[in-house]
Image (cartoon, rainbow, N blue to C red; front, side, top):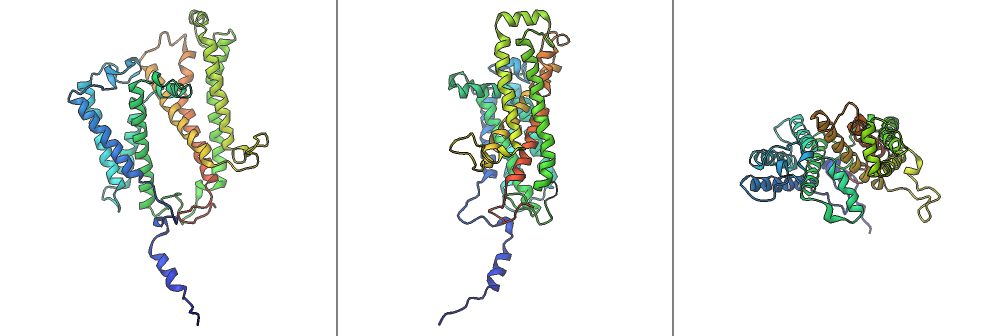
Amino acid sequence: MSRTIPLAPVAETAREVPAERRPAPGSRRFPVGWAAFLALLAYGLAHVYWALGGPGFPFGAEDANPEYSAFEHIGRAQLAPWVAAGFLLSAGVALLLALPGRRRIPVPVLLGATATAAAAVLGTLADFRILGNLAYVFMLRFSAINWTVVNQVFAVVAVGLLVMSAVTYQRRVTGACVGCGRADSGAGWTSPGAAARWGRKAARIAVAVPLVYASTRWAWALGYPLGISDKMWQEGKEDHLWLFGAALATMGALGSLLTLGLVQRWGEVFPRWMIGLRGRRVPPALAVVPASLVSVLVTTAGIMYIRLHFQGAFDDPKHNWGATVPETIWPVWGVALAAATLAYYFRRRGTCKRCGREAH
């Protein structure tokens, strides 16, 4: 005789564990908090080693190109202890974020410490050389990448993990799903409809800014010294710098046009001319990952140009503004691109496999 199993106790058992804490069947959550803690701790200890006299300190006066560094005239003995302290304190914040449960320290304090660490790394240690060396990677010229850039990349990745850990912690303590960030209170500005509206505005800015930069380089290549003195233009013409600059600017402009894919249908479904892929849905990560990376890189590059501009590092900035000012608005490009990418993610994320909430 068959036996009927009552459903009520099963449903009651499911309610005992909050939905945001139930992993999807067969999935394992990446321990981003512990990864952030270990990366920051390891790098902090590395700076302790350098502060004690170990060779290989990558920043300050010992930078491979100190003229680009925010600490150009500061030696290892003075700089390494402060950098070590910063990373070790950040490792402590990462540990607090990674441990289960809720800390007695207010959430805004932990999030503020995370934001401070990220701003310190992106605004001082990292600079445009990461973006420049990315070209060497595509050219398979790995020997051209110096030790300072390797350390810059590690520092950016470490604080990136810290930011991800902070986002996960904030979701956990507010009762939102740690996987998608949705809560029962509603989507609001993160809903697909709202994200489409503000995402389009952000995408327009992200396309316009690099075109402003590219216009100066195209003008120089065509023989118009826009924003630079005749002397500087002639010197660059003799070395064929303007043709090279125009080629790089064109690549950047074409790349910026890909930003339109974040708000156009061809960014969600492969177009017809892509044989073998046409008609298929574009995996969200295919757009989100590279766009997020570029947003960080152009932001750090722009911050460096702003810093150097106010430090008076460029010759005759009054008459040669075209060589530096267009780069100083790159942080606007980076922030706008990050916003457009976030809006794209909100529109494309679909049903969460962890909590089961759908887009609304």
